[in-house]
Amino acid sequence: MTDEPLPERPEPHDHSATPDLRASDADREQVVERLREAVAEGRLDMDEFGERLEAAYKARTYRELAPLTRDLPGAGVSAPVNLVKAPLPEGAVDWSARIGGAASSTSAVAVMSGFQRKGPWTVPRRFNCFAFWGGGELDLRDARFEDREVVINCVAIMGGMNIVVPPGVEVVVRGLGIMGAFDQREAGVQGDPGAPRVVVTGFAFWGGVGVERKVTRAERQRLREERRREKRELRGERRGELEGRRERHRASHEELMDRHRERLEEHFDRIEERRERRNRHHRD
Image 1 (tube, rainbow, N blue to C red):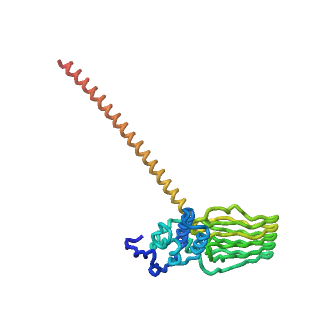
Image 2: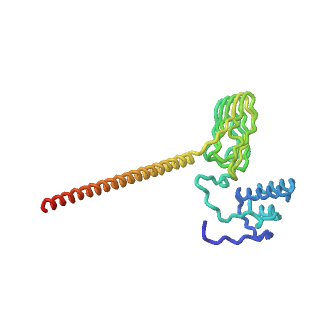
Image 3: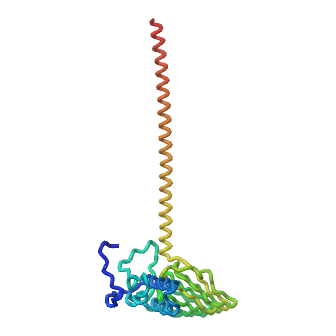
């Protein structure tokens, strides 16, 4: 955040004053959330909600978002514009930076062989893959997405495919298996706000389509370093606690020795007093 004053916001009804800045997924989600509240309050019917919802997800600039909430109470400004972006927390993913761009591959085929898509590639809106007596792997952990929702259509006949998605991505599985199966373990897991959604469809005969969720190598390294740092801090705390115990034990021991010395000195003083009294008695 900076200390510089923000630019003045446009008036709600001034279309020409609305900045033609690109809207992020978070901006669209805020507008959609306001529309949902308006439906719950009875301000919009379902037809109006559907039209505005579609327009919100298609909007690319603040100007296109402006009319969708302008006639709703509490809108204040024509669109939830954030001209200064807050820094992301450590480990968080900026999904808006990973959505968009031309698809780098739209299909894959493996006949008694295999295929693989991994690393930095762009997943198309619809990706078709086929495996017969073979297998394939689609790794989406470092991928970009052409759209917020992508469909991966898998046909596996006596073969198998595996789809790897990163944490935060929502997965919907709609495939059909005959003497085969589509992995449902990751289906229904809530995705991050603004994250893409991956819909897995298709057909498996004597084969299977697996879906698993894994972190990237960089994220795994970050988590490993974080655990190491926590262990070092814990060892430091334990070492400090041990040193504190030793210091308290040393102080207690010194206090005990001081008391012992004082008692010895008092004892020797009493002996010396008795000796002096005896000597005075003999002289008298």
